[in-house]
Length: 122
Image (cartoon, rainbow, N blue to C red; front, side, top):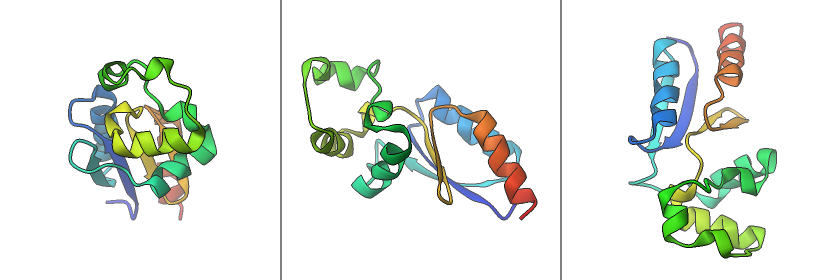
């Protein structure tokens, strides 16, 4: 097993989340899975992703929850969106993956491969 541990935020129903879990499992990387149906990501966690990708990249506009809440018509400030994403984690793009200070949104196998290579040589 690599001396590497990643954190994956997602749900068991998300195909992209399952893909991320499988990717790391195949490489014997320890995964700390956070099921967003059971525990929401904290505001601080979400800010890490928002700092790199921008807040709108975190919002899954195709999610059922986004549609159910009628969020397509709202004009929130970034702060309000952040609060909404903390309170409604099923509106997030999945998976959110973190390793050390690096983060990805969605399926980002190229980035994950880079992380594994760096960890192998650390």
